[in-house]
Length: 156
Image (cartoon, rainbow, N blue to C red; front, side, top):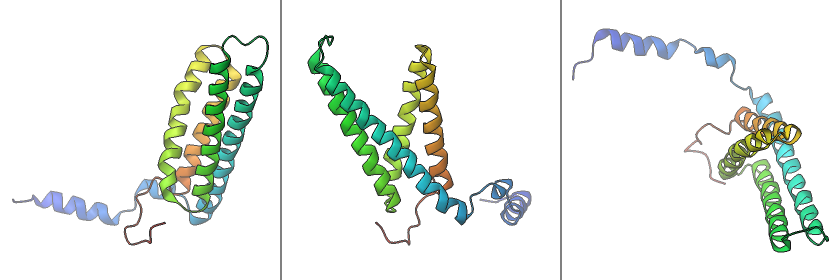
């Protein structure tokens, strides 16, 4: 297959010209601060879910509860999800990069929940969920969480 000379020149030229995105890439110092901040936000989310789960369980025993079983199961699910978020944050802090995919999935799942809350005119909850999800995704990105792993690096 014969490659035109202009294509060879274009690829050679582009290889040596710095990209505009290079100005916006995180420096190692920024990455070192971004990951602990993401872990703090994840831990706050996890603790909030644990608190919500405990509230649902206690409220489920009240007299005004229509379906106790559903309230108790919902509370247990919220406690398990909160504990899972805290464990994912701990794994990220320990450098276990396998934890970044579940964290990203959980944060992306927060968007439909927030949109539902906003459509139900619960602006305080919806906006706060969106802000925290965007912040966690941004901080993980700044910490280098979206780069492919180095194949020569030791696996953790």
